[in-house]
Image 1 (tube, rainbow, N blue to C red):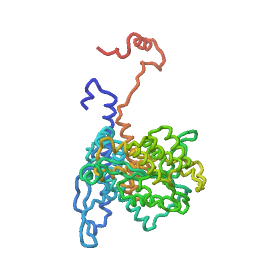
Image 2 (tube, rainbow, N blue to C red):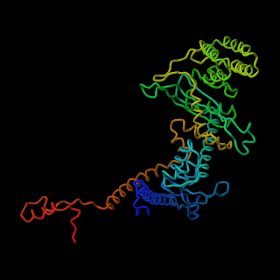
Image 3 (spheres, rainbow, N blue to C red):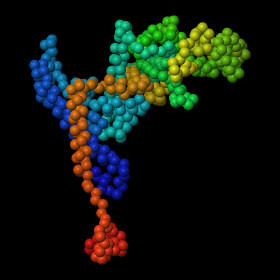
Image 4 (cartoon, helix red, strand yellow):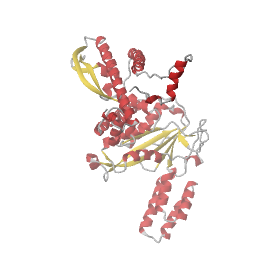
Length: 487
């Protein structure tokens, strides 16, 4: 508040001060609400099962700042004779899922962490809320949320293996793209990795493409789901299959089109009649450009490959080995390209141009276009996780799973499901009643506390004119009103 006494006060300072005042008021009201809630839980508990062990003082980190919290600790006797200590208030509010940090604050931290370093997130939280948190605190939250998401994925996989998943959304085709991102490792993770790096698996599934808006020339994918993590190829495939089974009626899917760069692990398990593998056009073109020195030859090879004239392309590559004069480095490159094409020969022609495939019609408002969105999706991870950064396998895995969640629809709802419990119907009604009466009381108090502003008028402005009144009013024409002081 000292800055208010100086001559350099700005609107920014005024805004911040009123914001802090508002936070203090909100904290006071919330402390009172939680205290009454804890009292009610205490009164209505099963006293034979839960023994009152006194109150414990703590603080909870919120958007409004650190809020003092006194809650009752209970000793519970289990059926097996053992005991445990619980806070009923924590369980009722869902605070036992992530620690004494409010879900709203966790949500902000998680959202920022997908794009900013943990130190930058720490600073952003301090700038835009009334709460400060260290970069280590941010890291701890990301690990906790990432582990919860990994556990949720394991539960999903187990349900899939037990045939408990049955989605009802029906689509004729699903598109699937998979790639890897090599990240620098640190510590023990570096010792176990190849040349200090390890490949993070990234995948997306979607139904097709639609225009961003009716007259747009740009398209976006429809109903995208994203996956990421350090997993074995079999696990990664099962996770994607489980997500599909949870959302879709699998019996109605005619084709699942897989787009990848040709790595052996990507095609792992894709051998059903409905599976179509396609070599990613971007990676194929990149390989041709990198390994063929003659620009005109590149154009011919790419055209032949696109049209399915594989033999022509391979013959041209073979002839280039002689045209380069047998130069070892060039022959090595051309041989590498030749092997790349042969090992992925069934995926060279894009799915839409294959004569042995009859594609069903796309749903209304949707189109089936050329795949290749994976590179842009991988770049989302790369932008946050590369650029001189190094990771432990666990740290990279947890953050990657959160970034994958953010790439889907309903990110906030999904994070909320991981970290926040639901109030009972009785307590929801209690909260609605409390907040309604509190809002009315606050408005009334604020209105009364504001200093009333009175607007003055020149004396006798709205009165019958007399000679005396006319003389008094004429005085205000002689001098500025603000200068008319008694001396």
